View 1 (cartoon, one colour):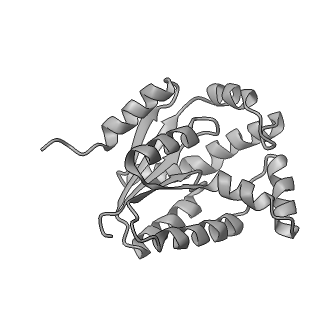
View 2 (cartoon, helix red, strand yellow):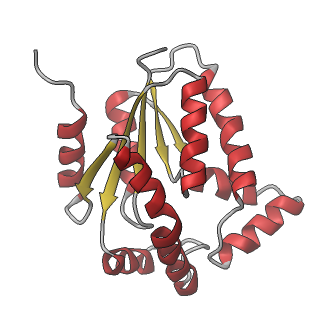
Length: 193
């Protein structure tokens, strides 16, 4: 398990992380972990946390770190126990410097050292345009603006953290889906011997 590959996809809301994650998953046969999907699934459980989470997300606010960390760590434990695990693609986490540091601790614990962080870089304007065209309960105008502000203030320090570690690969996310995928693949494919 020492050479386990982890690919973390980061970028503004609407940058295409989910789309690229699914393409990479198909290509590599890796498991897929989406914080957004996990949180949306949690809102469907009709209890206090599910109801409150749905309300929080519909207002454009984010789940607290303790809740996302709990949901995320449960899923990581489940994935870790798979017998034929090839790798893991992560979409939507970490969302802050604290989460990036916690994530590094988890990877170190599980002896997963081959980690690449791909930043799908798009402008605020492009993100806003993309998000106003799609329709999910958490894609209201105020919620979109709030998520873009959050990216600048909270996610950017996590990106800087990975850049300092030499793990960050920056990709122009404003290209077509196919061009973005080709650029990611060119950065990830093993060098020819």
